[in-house]
Image (cartoon, rainbow over all chains, first blue to last red; front, side, top):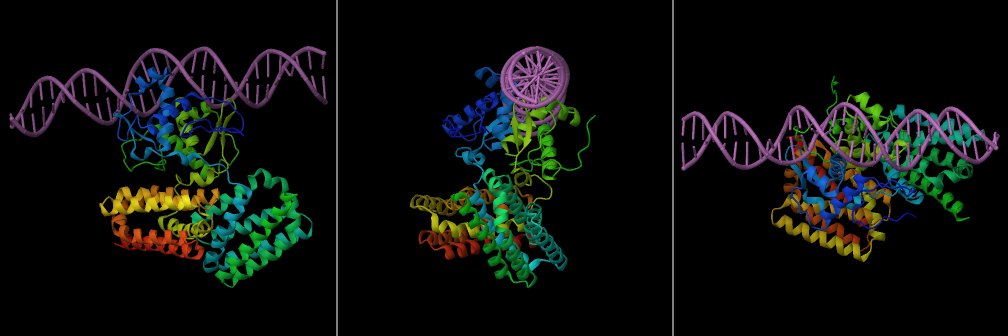
Length: 245
Length: 245
DNA sequence: GTTAATCAATAGGCCTGACCAATTTAATCT
DNA sequence: AGATTAAATTGGTCAGGCCTATTGATTAAC
């Protein structure tokens, strides 16, 4: 595990491999520490780029890149022609970039809640056209599973969930579901067991989706939420059993 | 020749001051749009800096600054010697910059659901230390509101909600709440009425937060969800009344 | 004396061109 | 074919220069 050194603020974007000590990140970190340390108070103007460059013995471009990193992080404000100023909210700003990828179980738990909400909302807002489309996805999924093509079936699984999310008419909700789905697919561990899981839950999945569809077509919000949550809980369960080995 | 820009967008955390058309921000926006638009998928490698510079008819330094902005924003990963790659979670984050960003009411609706879920989960998992911290935020918020400093109070409002999200021990949920909050702040319309809304709901907000806190300290999941939803619905209501004028 | 216009110093914004270091790809040699 | 090495590619940094925006002091006008 690569540790995150010392600084209170982490602007570094290091990955698994320890490398690339990019200069502008070092400078940005030093400046950020000075801010966090209270040596630079909110409202203060930083030294000029040229002075900072000389102070840290780097080029002006490197200083500029560091400052831009700080600006995007919300620590400072750059006023062209005037100077660089420390923002008032700069003190404790570290957690914004943390963003360690959520683990598989976290993803599933989030899906349970968010997709449950989405299903409930969708039940009240879904159109007949969308219901037809949903049914079509279901049919294709069923056919593919029957043909043992669980891998191809999963594509329609995704479309199914995505369509429900978009039926909420809420793009924020839709984005979140999309994001969770992407996360799930890109999760290292998830991909390892993906095939096993698909095989294991293929049958129940069809039934669960069928139930969700029924609730949606009945405009039964509470039922849709329950069905969706039951479905995701089921998948999660299978997942847990698998990684327990 | 400078090419015309048909979509005036702005990057993260910027005021609506139209006096800083810094080039690197324009380039960053265009790249972010390409990501949000799906023309650049997660994992894809962006064209080389030199190519991008030629494409957009700017210097390489400007492209570098744009890429650094995107990296700090969490949209891309820069691998020295290799290239610039689109990150998995880029789609969610980039929609902050996109023109099809969720509207204010969509954001509030999503918050109602997600933060409701978060509150319920948090009620079961929050630690005593976190409860203390929550209470501290509440006190500071109360003091600031009493002193008419509604603007400063909002900072603690954000911390309050964020802390609840993190108390769920689910980083995916936490990220989503964070994202929604960021969206809300960066929404043009929201910012316009921000001050009015703050004044209007300042008092009720304190009570609502107090109620949420009480439920959390009682480990009352259902109550916490209800209180949180009531709180957000209240803010939404005030918001709707305001834009109705 | 106060205000308004002016101007020069200073700040950041952007450009050109070059060289270095890490990585990737192609060529070469077993 | 596989391993090794060389070349091309890509990001990282430096240097110096010119531009525009801001600011404050100077000067002109009232």
